[in-house]
Length: 83
Image (cartoon, rainbow, N blue to C red; front, side, top):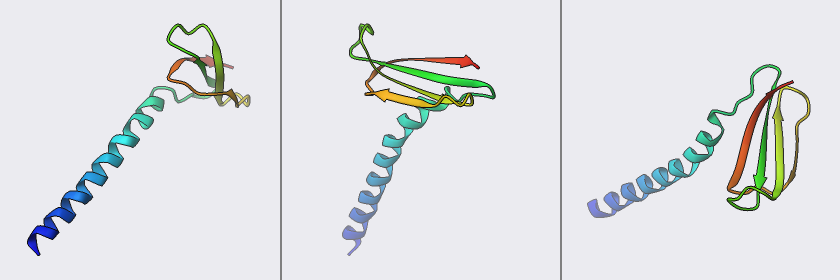
């Protein structure tokens, strides 16, 4: 009985730890890119590390020009601009 309780607690701890590790990178990726008043963030996605072929773009913020096209990738650049 005690052993099954211990395994149950270990399993819950592992699930919670894994969930936290999965969410943390997503939150930190946008932490520095929150636009202020009259600003927008432009994220441009590239096909590879050379960053020569654009495959998508996302624009969001407080300028009223939010849009997204193409695909996301691990190779990106971001710019914060005023409107």
